[in-house]
Length: 366
Ligand SMILES: *Cc1c(COP(=O)(O)O)cnc(C)c1O
Image (cartoon, rainbow, N blue to C red):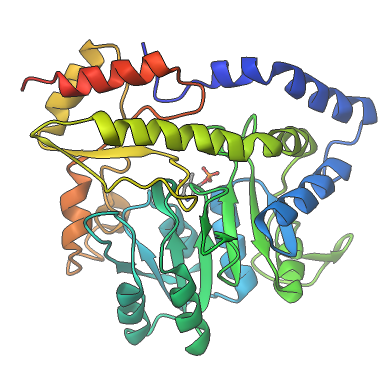
């Protein structure tokens, strides 16, 4: 069986590193907000090219605390896409902000400056740009200048794009702040949950440091609202510090797998996204578009190949929201939600695994 992700293979490849990292923490006996978190925050900020990194409990908290740190508050209208798994929308609802949904382009499934302009024209005070499937949004620099000219706050959600670069800069350095998830299957994954916010603004960083720990300005003295306990722990930070040096090489392997899929998958009922082999792409998920998706999935399962759907239900159609967005239509997002199919794509796959996936997909006889 070729899994959609293989964490066992990942951990066995890195086993000595992981054991050494955990031992360091246990030997020291310091498990919450100690030297490992500080060290990882410094390493990750330096890697991304931002001045500050604040470790938090997961990527969804990173979005929420990042937005709060930028100044997003209850009642604000905030633009986001509806094809990225609902994480931003959940964060907005937690803040009491109102989601405004942007559509995406049919080729890359990313949003654009035009959609941002539409959102700002409609009254959005903030925008979240999601670098989806490992693909950096190409016009992120123009989106960032447009937002700053219009006094609009910008958060980049980089949970699927650790290490991607646009115009020679890492994604996560264009907006006022950026959120990352270290969920185990992300390009940089921990041994459990983890997340971070990066920013180059000292005042924003200071607010987020307080927001992740009860709103304390100093121990047991609470000064700001909207806070909680959301800390990255020492064991996760120690493992992340030791995984970080492998990230670029693992991203190259992901890109190489995606390039082989792009060159070799060919089927009349399957459409591929335009191949991308630049360093703005880190191949987090390899997504194809299939007519009769369920038929293809059944065929792949029979061939011993796992697949997944990212994501089957757009945010504005989630049951939680009932008919609140019934009047909103996002033609591209809605059409693609019914056709997207994710194939296995991760560094631990062998060339034979990749060949087997290609052969199975091309051999689908519906
Ligand atoms: C995974 C993910 C998140 C959420 O991260 P968690 O650590 O699971 O909370 C947010 N945004 C995107 C685009 C993601 O893929």
